[in-house]
Image (cartoon, rainbow over the protein chains, first blue to last red):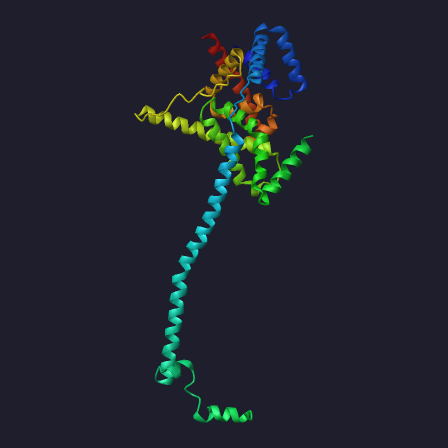
Length: 148
Length: 189
């Protein structure tokens, strides 16, 4: 194929998918009238296009929709499970930290209490060691107050 | 007409987004034939077609929360179908290399699904087109499939493949020419 023919063939190929300029269209029409070879190439390209258009490429898969939906439902339940797993995992990750912090706080408070009170008796722990005996009311006094 | 279809798809998608998974079956049923055809055109009649087509709908479902309806559902599905098919073609190439180095593959995956309802002439045309497409480089094949077989415009083809229009036009010209040569060769045999 000569250089000129090559250019015209490219123009022919472009004409299938692009809008050629009026000048290019005129050039192509003229070439098609004059060249039997180019007309033959045009016919071959049109035949290829028709062949592709008419090829029945349909594929039927039985129960396709049902199969897809089953997979999607599985995916959904897996996602829900993985969310629960993730929550449980994050809880198990955070628990040792919370437990350790609480224990440390308890130890610091106990140590502070021991340092300030000098012992760790039940009264000290309950915070009743500072209440004087005068403030304590016997059952009899309590009942007398209500004139029983 | 297109608006009605798009709106109806959009309505189904909103239902799916709000948790009604079962509504998604309407999308699958509506587009299964189209997607199966696209994947068959890309991969030939093989047993992978069903897996890939199923994966197209699963992938779309997974990304449905991000779907805003900027393009038609069919466009999104076609894009996923082409991408997954191109990945499958790469996987096949890798597999054939592995088999070259001694690892056996299951092979003969082409033309395993034959539709008995087709008559002999239709089947012959289908076989010829499948063989011709198979010989076309994947980047040319995807453009030929979208433009010449599925009827998308060159602009839509560029959008689906996410490549410039100029690239589509030049590849299309190359694809037409190469396909013509391949078909002539195959017919001469």
